[in-house]
Each structure stands twice: as C-alpha cells, then as structure tokens.
Image 1 (tube, rainbow, N blue to C red):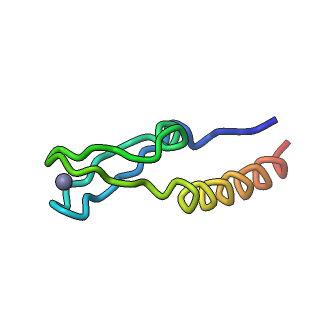
Image 2: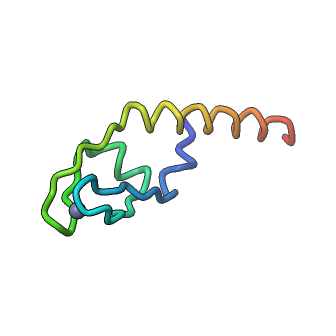
Amino acid sequence: MTKDVFNDAEISVPCPQCSHETVKTIGWLKTQNQLTCLCGATIMVDAKEALSEIRQAEKELADLGSMFE
Ligand SMILES: [Zn+2]
C-alpha cells in the first residue's frame, strides 16, 4: 500500500522569467509536468527529481511511523 501523505503538501514553483512563485500541491504535480505562470510562461516541472525527494521523505516518515505502532 502506498502512502501519499504529501499529496496535500504545497510547494512553490518559481518562474524563470518573472520569479513569481506558483503554489501547487504535491498531488497536482504528480499528474502534471508543466504549469502556466501568471505571466504566461510555461514552466516545465521536473517531477521526477521532486518526486524522488518526496518518496524518500515518505519512506523516512513511514519508517518513523512504524516505530510508534
Ligand atoms: Zn512568470
């Protein structure tokens, strides 16, 4: 069973053109690979890199949680 405890967590994706930070949830980023900034720029989201960090954090959290069960 997969724990997606970070799905509701929000991260901000900075725009390379105007520096505006668009806030998206992890769950959203898992299903998208790009977003459109307020300035109209299309930002490619490196989901694989972000997700690998998220997965690692989820795993550590799961390990931590199992210690208290
Ligand atoms: Zn922008």
